[in-house]
Image (cartoon, rainbow, N blue to C red):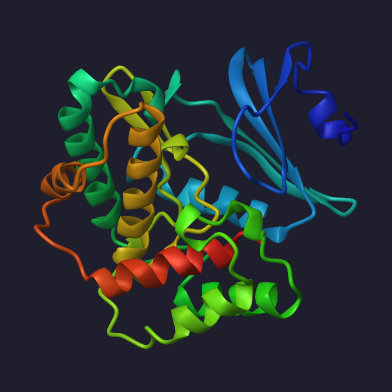
Length: 263
């Protein structure tokens, strides 16, 4: 791994591990005791979004638990983000059948706390217009990774999903600060503390963006526990979030948007 001199001189690279999960285009490494004896995460990418993520994490510091950013810069065609590794476990690793109700309620509470952050001064806002422009480019240039579609959508093309999505738009947005990808691996936990990571898609968007992705990650991880799916699981999450019901049309829209974003 070749790094700029400023990083080579300050990072201890004697214990480098690849990130164990995710569909990111970035090179991501976990480094034990990598900076001033702290465990760190190193992201490297040619995409400006990595720099934007670092600046948004700095802005979030003190508003909600997030990693400390140590380095965030551009050099010779690449963006480098070095940040604290927070939490011992990804949230889904703490789920058990006997604690599922309690944990899904907490999941909802955490998302609500994120949505209550005042977005004034946010450095980089990936709002709905930004996200839809990205999706249009993915569809136009056949970049959508259809192999990762939900099982109900398998066999369909990016254009077909785009047409279905646009049939549900426009709508009046209920604006909050959305994380953008609240899948369970993007919440790290340590005892009772939760840390939000991977805020690359953060922006002021309708709250159903995060709710839709939360619903998907709940279903996926419950099924990974070999439990029979029940709508009750979503009700537990919504109880924690403080909302009794959702707009199903918006949920469908944002699930389709997220599928088309993976390109």
